[in-house]
Length: 381
Image 1 (spheres, rainbow, N blue to C red):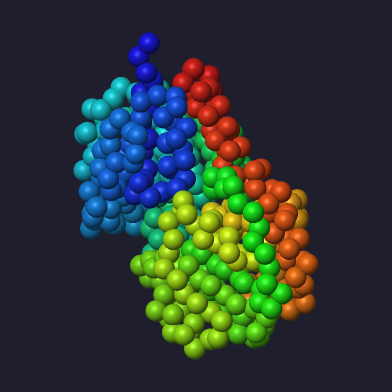
Image 2 (image 1 turned 120 degrees about the vertical axis):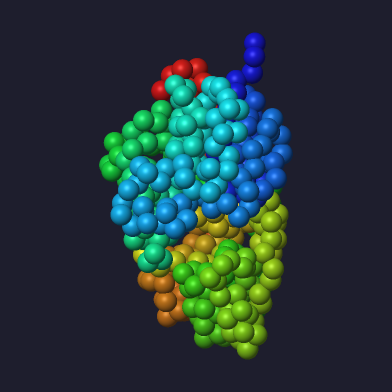
């Protein structure tokens, strides 16, 4: 029997995109996979169609921007430089038995290549507000993402998203049943590290983005005194403020900034710490219902968690006893949450992470995704 042929479209550097790489592991078990994305081919695929590095996945040309401003959304579909660069190769590379679109911007190309075969849309976040804190994005791109979701999601055979809150939004707004495939990290065979009674070691990993309230983390540790330290593993991003963070950390005792760590080794690096901390202002619906990679990375590292409030985070911390929820995203709230914490508290949170590590790993999500892909390839929606 000929192997099933599967197309996976993601306007991201797939070779470094943890979620899509986990998705590909599932797809490769079910067929021969062709990928479309930026950068070199990810490991194990039959074919890779590379989107040129500087070819945007959005219609950022003068004509494209004008059409976005006028809400001529159908006219800009498949006109982004990245789409135009690969459209012919993608369509001619078929036929396929299943097409997977990662995020709303991949939907037009996915449907152009799919013909009559099933399309699975993996909506990583809430597409209409992906970068809604940026004014130009909110005015021009947000309505286009809404158009793509309204037009294409009802035509998909299946939809997934990262949390129950976001899945509910997709179902409510677009009338599509949405299954949950979290951004959970792979299970790591680690044990909680010992807690030094003299210093509780806090850690944060992620992008050096002003929206992540990293300056508040530094301020809180400075105020908490000798009993706490903070290590930051930060990735520089366009528009970020890594230099500002470094300057602040350089004059703040017990705060250290490290280079970023590859996702596959991050839990082992973080395992030496005690509490993973994250203060995240909830400015959009994506923020409100976020369940981020770092939540799962911290669990696999067997850390206790100290997060600012959000429905998905609150529910998971309560269910598994993983740590503390601050009152808000301020330095004051973090100080209040940590000032009376005991070593026994920290040990208990780390042990809870150890007990929950299997349930909060990628294993349940792979099972969900594999069952879904098998169903679609068998012609069942």
